[in-house]
Length: 489
Image 1 (tube, one colour):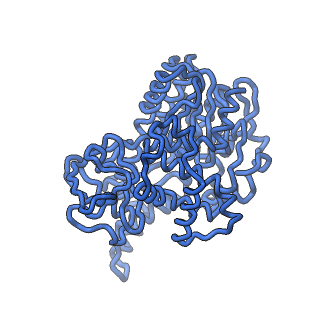
Image 2 (image 1 turned 90 degrees about the vertical axis):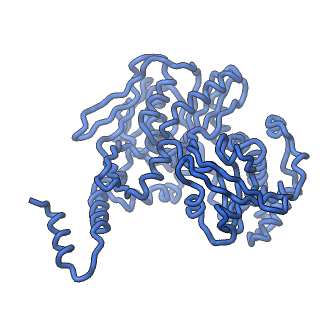
Image 3 (image 1 turned 90 degrees about the horizontal axis):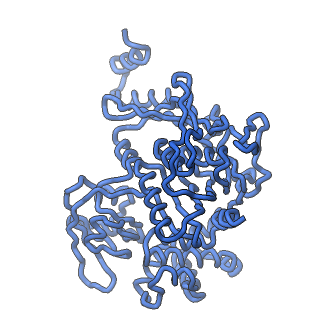
């Protein structure tokens, strides 16, 4: 006998006055059911599933370029290392005018349209017509699409002779491998002893990758890292294996309101076991375990089956009884001042727990850092946000109109030198004015140090690659500075 939902759908399909789309009705019903459960049980249509799987698998198929639409033209920010675009000689600042002889410049395309044109099955060919500064005619590059890795490690470098820094943007299927490669590289360059692990803005990903990474931080065996439990999922504990290929002494972990799920598992385990110092701001608060099930039409159901718990027994998950409150919770943190003042964080004594060494920690909504680092309120400045969006086009214009040979050609020299002159900042402000971003003298003076750093970082990225951008930007990063200072102490 069919269930009630099938009965209702049958009546609608057989008796409703207008033509209906059964699939749309089914999907609406599924979404409505899942909304009654929790915020992270979701339905994924088959059209969206491929993109999600690409992000998690750590690879996609295409030509391998990072681009930005500037003045209705696709401008290459960076060809990805080892990609078809990089091997063919496509350069930062190149403009894609045609794809397979079809004009795309000035056609009102959005980023999704461009991605659709450039991505395709591995082995298929696409011809891009490139406009390059200093060359009058179009350059045509026949490119054979390939599998392009989506890197989990954005940057890895040494802050001094013993302190390394690694920024991890997600826990995709290649996260542990890349993390270990980064540690290996830093260990070979210098005597790596201490590490700053930057998980700010990291939304999580695969639990096994986080567990393998946590194992690297403990030389002891059978140390509890976390456990999961649900009404239909018995308690499952995850413990250390007892080996660490790269022994580390001191560890600092950076988190913020964008650090979620696997990021919180890593931070929570290291905090509960007193293995690392956690700095930054309270993390997102996602502590639910999902399993994904493929449906008959190749769509998918991602269903919450258990809770995560840190070694002390803390649940990371913030309350979700009211879905609208859950969605607006981060905005409320801003409104109540939590992002800027440590005393605005509301901790409940009823959810107090203790680390291995007896320090107080709290559950019920993310990981609260050991050392609070306030968010600089300048990043909520609308004028600065608009100016930052102009940094990339200005730098591309700079490389087209200025002689880049005057810039340092060694990364170490570039970091030390005052690359961005006062005149360059003035030129940028004039460029912004042409783009209708007006500001007073006082505003310009207030934003000048930030603009100088953003300009230097973007120029460095153009010269030395994506990872170098973070090395420059972190020179003025208060979170990184606080972590480095804490490791010294």
